[in-house]
Image (cartoon, rainbow, N blue to C red; front, top):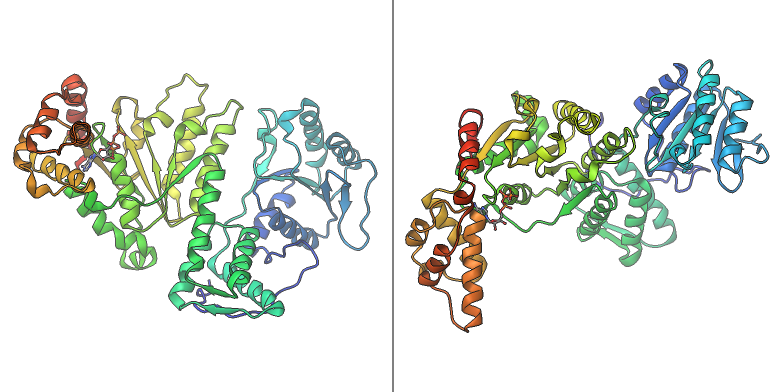
Length: 520
Ligand code: ATP
């Protein structure tokens, strides 16, 4: 692979008649992958993407290479053959009529159906796809469904061969942005004020955006003030945030916590510090004989800082933090839940380097066999991704309940380490008081931290925070101020979880003793 260019110059725009906006040609590997599917007579192909233009370009190249006609469907005009001799078979604008035409034509041709309604919506269409499959698997003719999401339904799922558009490489983004700047420069003066580091950062930030989005963001940025500079990096990051949230599967967390906001967990913090270099520069790590860190599993008592740690890691490593709520993955149609997971993974990978936080992982994969095997299938998909993933996505999975954790998840090699986050020790409790007093603008030197730590044996970090907050409310209502005595009074009035859930915590501890490393 050629090195990533570190300067942005105003290159010459490549001009394609179709599609608009123009996108760079597909990579040789992608073209080859889809060519093999067609040559191997896979008559029904599926590509879930928002990048319709890339699919059009790809299939244009493929049709050329295989010498096959390319038809593209559109709900207004129906099917249209591409190229100079193009024609439109009449009456194919309705989905059912379009499928009937394809079936009866029995043609060695590529039919692209972008944004076609999902076959699961109408039993007749599903039946028509099955008939097309029976006829077309005898030759190289194929139908390609392309849309951001497609519901196939249980009958069609096994008949479709999915393929993915891999994220463009930094070199390809570079070429696209240079061409784009050149085009804008033909119409108005444009200056580029980016150091080579800025260019590298910009290309990293663009990773995961579609060409259409890049075009919109970059054109707008340069047209606004006639220049592309560091301040435009923020706009790119905002755009990425919107993409993540639009998916409905993932949530983007802005950086609010730092490692200094966490009391204790010294061993875990040290472990992370040592791994940072290898994660930030996986190439150098590989040359040194190390593989890039995959991620970790944080097990522990409620309210002891597992979520806080996930946020702090992303902030320290200056990476986007993306949360996957496993509850959002489950859908009623067969196969849809796995597809949701694959889609979530694809989005996370397109945001790489990033931290993917899976909260309460036991809820995603520990559902037992009461759901017709959906959670086991999802789990299988997740494990193989975790094992083989190539993109820099650092996974942090958190769990409270070990009883429901599938044992495969705990096997060596899945995560780099399994940490147990226990109730905080006495010195850590003092630190946690300090963190929360400072956060609320109080000088910790005015408080007897050792006495507070001694009085809160068995309290979680969240409960200590609550002691501070409740004392503040009390003082606020009487227009007074908090002191050690009011904090001690709040602590005495609290019944911590370690009392109400003594047995459960004891079980968790003895389980973790043998299988996990103490975070403290
Ligand atoms: P749960 O399993 O219930 O989700 P958790 O282990 O993920 O709990 P957090 O959500 O991280 O716990 O903790 C809740 C809050 O308690 C944090 O936002 C933080 O304010 C406080 N807290 C917990 N542990 C610590 C700590 N070690 N240092 C500072 N604050 C802490």
